[in-house]
Length: 238
Image 1: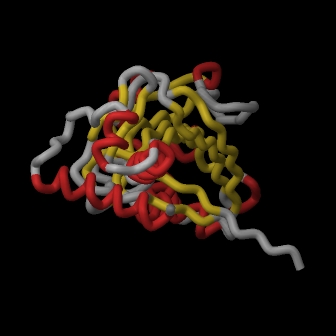
Image 2: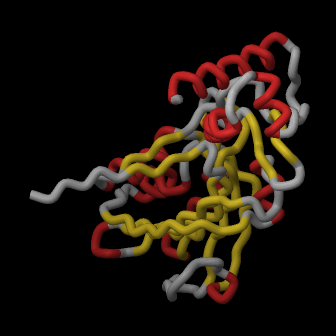
């Protein structure tokens, strides 16, 4: 079964590459397409699941299966065995800033209570991309407390993550990270940037970064396209 559904994936990819099927086209209904390919519906579903996971097709109830890319899309995989792994996302991808503003503590979209000396925060909004793909795979809102808000002028020319700019500007380094992950329905503003339908399932990661002495460096809210991002943990018990 495994070999067969992978053959079906290859056949569909070949059809797209040859121009027989184009980006934006909808594939035939499941029963019809399975009959056309001479396979069972269960095998076709496995092939569709594989193609959807690789970012080639998108499946929607009542709307069917639509081709959204010509070939499998790059996916960022983040292992979480240590602090450097947690920071790898920020170090190994590109962060593009869309907007910078100042907000009051009451307007922070982050769970829990967090302190900024002036009760105001620098809010940095942007999107994250991989080097070989200009399409954003995550949207990001970063909140910087007043003690580090002096980075604002530097952000205009920075091409690194906010925490890296803080490290370089203030001579500090991250030594603790807390984060939580949950599935949510994608808000419209984020869906537009990610190329998803509003309400589509996405992953949201809330993270807090700290420097020495437990001082908060930044709060980060990131929303990820789950077809292009993977969170991986490997834990051993001695």
